[in-house]
Image (cartoon, rainbow, N blue to C red; front, side):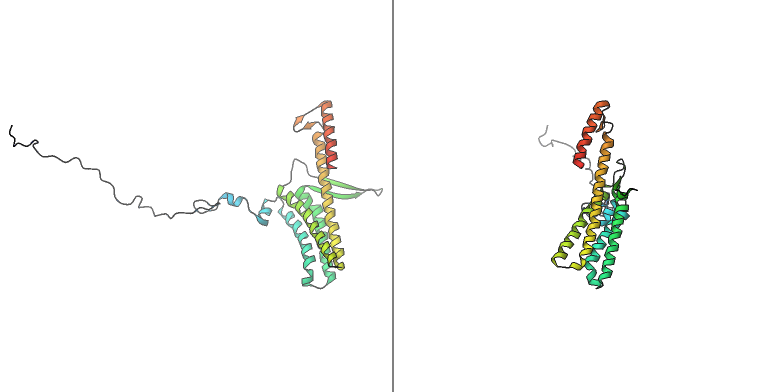
Length: 249
């Protein structure tokens, strides 16, 4: 073997061509999308989610959740209007008689509406005074069936109105006494009589409804859904009725 002979004969062929890497922009057919900033209550497409509209605050939200929005609106309308006219009447007129008449009319409308309409529709309670043939006066209370509970919003707003507005009239009474404004004292006293009458009437109507519900629930010894018949049921039912009677007055 000759020393001048090459170790390898022939030519070295190149390997197979490397796979080509695709060039260009990926998804160039789609337009470029700007980044979005999401805030609570919105979806990715920018629309407000259902959770944002489910609960609304303010007067509009309360009226939407109310089962009787007209009754609730007129309850607060008459009561607020009476106080507003009493406080602001001096800015629009100097006629004392006209101011007295307007406030008394508003108070009368509020008293009738609260006792006959708002109480019956919002909380299912009603009361009135009955005079029999012998001249004896008795209070009569009506209440809705416990199987049909009142709307929580309606009940809450009704009791707030019943307790808040007498406090406002009491504050106006104190202010009148401190300012020696004796001419308007009869209006404030009349407003307190009307408001406190409805407050006491519906408070006792509510207690009477709870008593009657307790009596119907425990008359057969049915306590918390467990029937207790016979002498045991009568004994337990009587004990619970007596205890509830002491608590509720």
